[in-house]
Length: 126
Image (cartoon, rainbow, N blue to C red):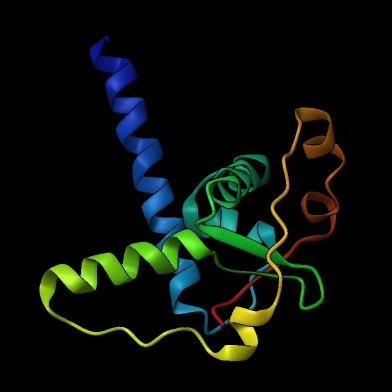
């Protein structure tokens, strides 16, 4: 793998981490344009990052509230890391845990017509 390709991979990884940090704060509702601006990426790239994280279970889209929330996988990872450091993490609230999590598979065609790209979205922690 060439040096330039490795650099691009590292930059993309940094954007994913930055995105997770922004969403973890969860104290404001962010339109996709605002999120893209904070990440210094295009709206399309911001949405692609969100969809990639959603497809891995790191985030989930709450249609009713129209926000991204931490997904099951992010909760599992947090508990694993906390266990390694000897910390205890409380289980998610029963109400949140009892809600079904819809896992979507998204094709490029669906992505182009995704309403979140057009109308924005909100980012929030539970």
